[in-house]
Image 1 (spheres, one colour):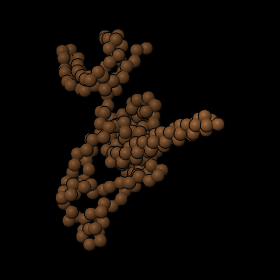
Image 2: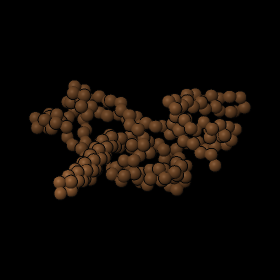
Image 3: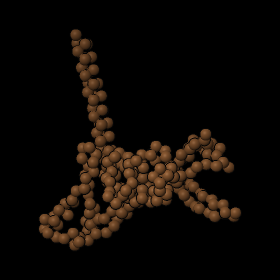
Image 4: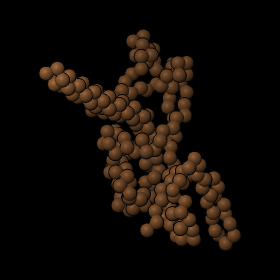
Length: 216
């Protein structure tokens, strides 16, 4: 069975005669390196295609004057993301200024969908009372290869409803996922540094043993 996976850019959707719809995908930067032959073998064959945006676009409310987010987050040692009050907001509370006096605006942000899905699959993403679905299971099933159509069938809902609710949930947890991803990368960097230090210490111990043996 021929199989390839790549990340294209959707360029065009054309309506051709006899009701044929043509989709034009563009791949840059060697994204099909080593896959051209497999793709050529699929010409004039029926394939299953599932297109999903690589990045999730969401909005963050920021202080118009300071450009700082109105909501900030920190991550504890277990990787749980907590909401914290920014310094300026705490000062306003201390001074008794009502929050509605703070000038705000919406800022567009993007985050890779894979990062958000990994955050949800970690089990650390929050649940919301107005969201009835278990997105942890949904994302886990999807990462295991189950299509949205099959997941929707398991939940007795339409795939359109599922993807719409999932998209809204992803946007809602995206700021937390970004902070969690920073924490995760920091933990990996510390682990690699500790591993390097341990190897260096072992090397020094071996050198000391060698010097002692030579002196004897």
